[in-house]
Length: 111
Length: 120
Image (cartoon, rainbow over the protein chains, first blue to last red):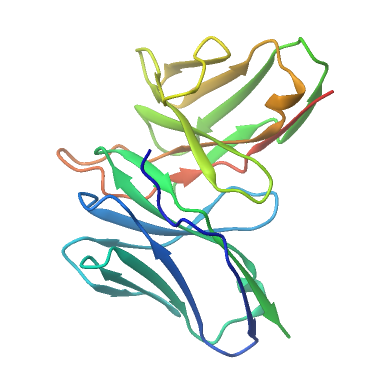
């Protein structure tokens, strides 16, 4: 079936550095993309989203980039903090209202 | 903000018994809720879409008689794992989005905090 984010890498960064988490998606018809953060034992928490008619969107300390040509999403976290340590999932809306998740990336922030 | 509450947060049951998990939207109405399943160190897999007042829509490979879904009101969906077996042990998470404007579903899901099911 369709999938988003075909690998589960781990990213380790120093506190204060910037983090970049990448994701590949496979459904070229998807028109809405979301990044979620999941802490251990909890449900995913919304971070930022982007529609397919945009290629960049900024939030507080976070930026999402969308490259539809190569079907790639990235999440940039500025000045990474220990509280940012979590698993990050990209997700896409496919089939109208269903949200399909990628494999996720575990972010470790070293103090 | 929109809050989704899930209960219980964890449950241990014996093989062969059934377990019911509740998902409530606390401050908004949701005609549609989504149930996901997550194994350790894996992603969320969509199991089914719960539709208020009608039958749930199950993803390919998900047994509808095994995972009974009821969405009797605009704020409550329940997932019942029937005749549970150890392989059903998992983290079950529900979600919903505030009723979207006409013609678009492009808004994020709000998630409950999940239910850890352990079948012994």
